[in-house]
Amino acid sequence: MTTHALGEVKLGPAERASAIVTMAEAELQVLVVGGGVVGAGVALDAATRGLSVGLLEARDFASGTSSRSSKLIHGGLRYLEQLNFGLVREALTERALLMQRIAPHLIRPVSFLFPFSHHGWERAYVGTGLAIYDALGIARNQVRGLPLHRQLTKSRALRLAPALRRSALTGGLLYWDAEVDDARYVVDLIRTAAGYGAQVASRTQVTGFLREGERVTGVRAVDLETGSDFEIRAQQVVNATGVWTDEIQAMVGGRGSINVRASKGVHLVVPRDRIQSSTGIILRTALSVLFVIPWGRHWIIGTTDTAWALSKAHPAASRADIDYVLDQLNRVLAVPLTRDDVEGVYAGLRPLLAGESDTTSKLSREHTVAHPVPGLVMIAGGKYTTYRLMARDAVDAVAHGLDGKVAPSCTDQIPLAGADGFQALWNSRHAIARSSGLHVARIEHLLRRYGTLAREVLDLIAADPSLGKPLAGADDYLRVEAVYAVTHEGARHLDDVLTRRTHISIETWDRGLSSAQEVASLMAGPMKWRSRQVSREIDNYRARVEAERKSQEADTDTDADAIRLGAPEIVPVVVHDTVPAAGDGGAPRQPGGGAPAGAGTAPRTAAAEAE
Ligand SMILES: Cc1cc2nc3c(=O)[nH]c(=O)nc-3n(C[C@H](O)[C@H](O)[C@H](O)COP(=O)(O)OP(=O)(O)OC[C@H]3O[C@@H](n4cnc5c(N)ncnc54)[C@H](O)[C@@H]3O)c2cc1C
Image 1: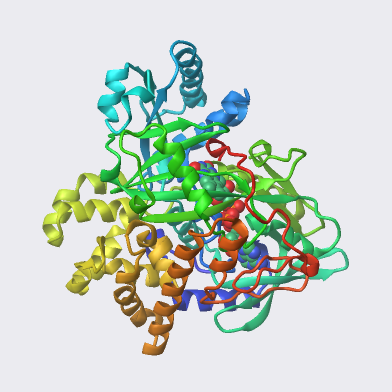
Image 2 (image 1 turned 90 degrees about the vertical axis):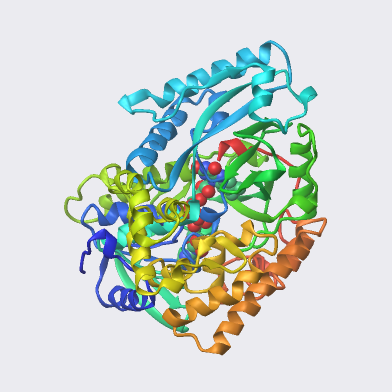
């Protein structure tokens, strides 16, 4: 296996094909199933300990929960209320590490205004909590890199957030956390892992396990793009499939050692000018909190928290979800938002370790590592912020199963691709703007998305200046980004570019439809698509957008799910007989063909802040 300098790592079509051949040829030490943040983190952790590693992802990288989060890197105020200081400290330590060393280009500070609706006790209660939050954030000699929280008078709070109704607050408090481009972070993690020798392939599904007696000795997989089946031998397989954990467990048979429940969280995206505020906002709701998070020229607002047992690949937001989020926010806005203000909607599924409690908000967000049979390690639960610790624990479990000594985790020392030298390049942005002929605002955009790898993007523009022009219908982005997504970032379909490499699908009124033709045409060259495939990509994307829009008019989860699943998959996954996957691109399937458990409009159980 060749190890490249990080800047040279490409995840293009040729690299994917060669990774599949390499994985099928020789026995790996570790094979990771799942290309979300946890699987990608496991691949990097294992590769940087010197192990030979492969990673298979059934769909696009980060297409599961890891592109559908609230995008916060945070300690979790809920744990504080539960007096779980250890967990908060751990997450805040990670926050500092990720923000300062591992991915400064993708993680940014964000402030939140907490408006008080009562006099007296609320200020003391929340103020004490935030003082502890700040203090835990400086533990273990970590430099916080974030300002401490501040108490605000009512008039100061209103100056920061004039959108709030005067009668909705008595005062407030301002505190700081961090936000991340969750989908891009996963791609950078995977590129970094590939730079340390990991072989990775998206659109490649694990369909079964190879066994020697009880022991797992590898996986059976199918390249969903070509339909070809193959086997990969591995000394240890790590299952990092989030809400799909139980399905993978079912493939090894017997009673599962980890049970994961899914809880749906829906976010709305509205333009920045709809809410006048120079800070993010956090509101208490009856059962949890609601975040209003600054996101470029937009706000992300969410979330909900309801049990979900329908399609895992395409959780659908219903009218009830959207109305709930709007109602919660409108309690405090001077000018209420309506559905007409909503540009984008997305829904994700929290992988919660199933516990005793019936309400998803009480289920644990901590993670678990299990070793159900020799050769197989399961990792599940947790949250985005602590993915690195989950990965470390999973590879520690792998190390027990490998002969010989394995080095300890060193990912706290490994900046992601694009991170090393980011600050210096950021400081040169005006000079780069002059030499490239692009406006400095464009350079800032590229640096914030690609870090130091922006140099590679600029090289493509230098070779073909037409790539430096904005994309039709989404002029925040440049044409080059569609090309780079294919050649370097593993994008293989139109949806991958419009939804995860860029976020055009949630940041534009037409959800990316007017960019679809140009993006597909730009992808056609490196993907070697004929015009028929270009049309197929566009038709498929349009069908998805239409199905999503219609599902968002449905009153119940069951109806929304059925409508969403009317849009076909561009690359259908295999629905395995033993896999009780609900409708990944077909009619919803449940074990025994019965009605899905928990179908319908589930009760709101809430708990957004605990992600
Ligand atoms: C609404 C919401 C808000 C959240 N907000 C935050 C937040 O602000 N901060 C935070 O820290 N955390 C947050 N979280 C939690 C966080 O997003 C998740 O814990 C994390 O993304 C889970 O990552 P994962 O890798 O375990 O799962 P996933 O990202 O779902 O990855 C699992 C992958 O496995 C693949 N897979 C499944 N089966 C197979 C197979 N047979 N073969 C190959 N691949 C397969 C899937 O396609 C998928 O890509 C939030 C979660 C939700 C739902």
